[in-house]
Image (tube, rainbow, N blue to C red; front, side, top):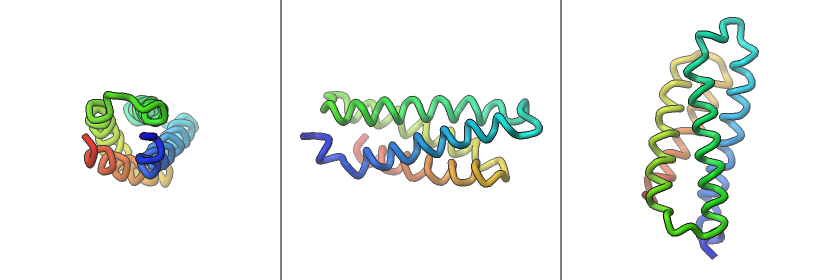
Length: 108
C-alpha cells in the first residue's frame, strides 16, 4: 500500500512529468532550438526519472530512498537549467521541478 502512503508524492511526480514534457515540446518550437539543447535534454531526463519513480512507488519498490535521491538531483538540475530561460514554459517547468525535488528530498 505504499502508493496510498505516497499519493501526494506520486501526484507531484506526475505534475513534473507533465511540465517537463510540455517544456520539451515548446523548446523544440523555439526559434533558436540549438540554444535550448541542454534544456531539452534535461527535460527528457527529468520526465523519464519522474515517470519511473511514479511507477516504482505504485508497485511498492524497495528502493524508495535511492530513487528519490536520484530523482531530486535530476529535478534540481532541470529546474536550474529551465530557470535560465525567460520562456513561460521554462519558468513553469522550473517551478514544478523544484517542487518535485523538495518532495523527493523529504523521503531520500
